Length: 193
Image (cartoon, rainbow, N blue to C red):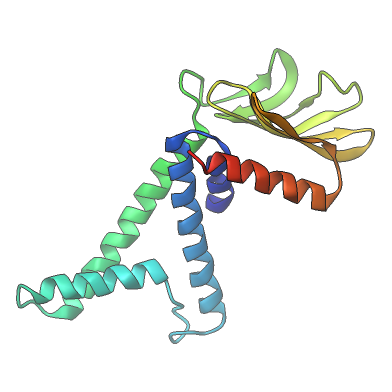
């Protein structure tokens, strides 16, 4: 989940959300590596938490300057990483999902029955433009303008994406290759900030 929120943060072309997105993606990749190495039985089944190990190593080196047992510093470094990654991941996720001046969570989208919104995410409401469609997921920028939208249209799932004020990247695209190229283009634009 943290990785998905991080990708959304990178999509939003705002410096704060992009930085928070990168942070969430890094933490998510670290957690994936840790999980896979645990499943593989590495380190006697404890796995390898790359950022946690780096924090433990740093802690051991720092306490070495004060003639303290390096094992104590290693443990302290790992504990500090665990607490700070939880705090940083939570704050970054809130930064990404929240739009300034808007309610955080609710039901009913755009005066239409049904649907939900969670900060900049909304979905599961009848599409106003596509009479037979439904918006599954809609992602907005800080101005409340949509940048990426997954909708059903004509019985198919299609994706719409745009760089606001610049170009329409995806328009009713259902082809996986086209959607992937469009997402990469949106991520590249969002990461410029």
